[in-house]
View 1: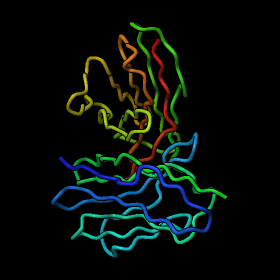
View 2: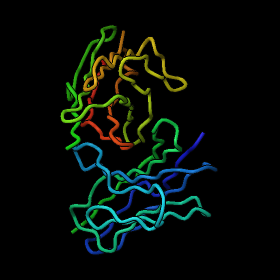
View 3: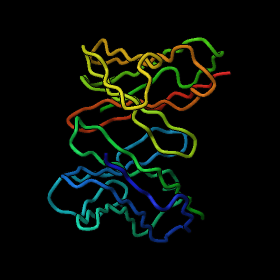
View 4: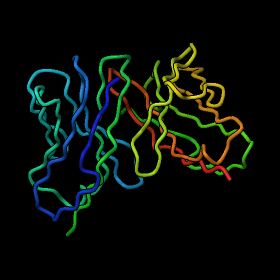
Length: 113
Length: 113
């Protein structure tokens, strides 16, 4: 069975700092990769996704992620975070079986002014 | 577009009673919906895949007789927690599949006293 690891559980950054959240998955076959964000009191929203093609994926709100197949990684990045980026971030993997998603444990990002 | 709602947003019930949670896709039809459970500060755990017009597919370890799922129409799936106990207290989230992407509802907080 596939699994997803997010090593950063809680990250605190000052505004304008750069962000990188790690995501590693374990599955040997073809995968689809996702990053979701959950703002306080709101539902999960898709930030970006990778299915195939260019391994550098750009999403909404200035986020991007890079798929490195050799490292089984899909790290999320943003050059300059804003206070409004404070949220919970989840990495998820779909290994092609009926669109089921396996989620990582999430990373809570706190951006301070 | 692609809005998913859940009702109720929160519910408190007494131990031994049953609770029904609705998941609706408001502006699209979804033959497949998913039900997740999220414990505090933990990830989303897939409970079951709900397919319109057929029986739900439950993940390993999820009691199908306790968590009854009915996907009676292309816009509605329901999750009924039968004979609820305090350990069933959790945050339940549904999603609806559209063009290979899952759209999430806002979640339902269930507290069993």
